[in-house]
Amino acid sequence: KRDDERKEDMALSPETAYGRHKAICESVISSSGVRYFIARLPTVVGQTKSKTQLIPILIRQAMEGNVTLFKEAERDIIGIADVARIVAAILKKLKCNEIINVASGISVPVSDIFGEIQNILGVKPAVKIMNGGDKQRFNVEKLHAYCPEIRFAADYYKNVIREYISQQRSN
Image 1 (cartoon, rainbow, N blue to C red):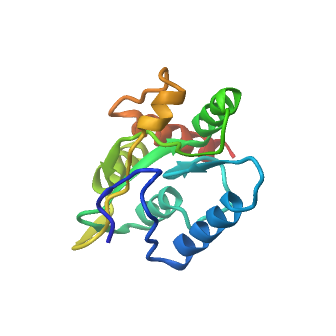
Image 2: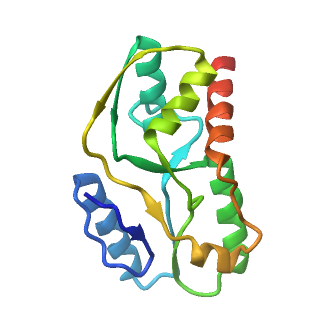
């Protein structure tokens, strides 16, 4: 269970196969001798065919009428268009090899994220709250050093979710 703030210079200690794979990929890239920029991303929201990501799963569960949430779970939500804009801005300024957290820096309880989904969809599913869940917290000091103009409001995640649902409805 990870609740600590994730900084780029911290040793990685992934607990899942996916996390271990990402850590191996970073190691291969950073030891390869090529110039690199590694963007560590939080929960990215945008058009995708994958239905296994957090927001599509919560939307599907809401529409089906039964949702399971973890009491302590928090996620940093960022829109894919913002990721692209930030990465482009960093690449214009990058002078050396870097690993940078490209995140909003705002950790939102998953119950609040689901509450926004519920409000937008206008549904009232049965909600089961389970103990557990980790907190996705990203330190964004290095991001702000590269892009001081990048700041996110506390309710930023609401706009990301609203836009995603709007795009899904129009497809």
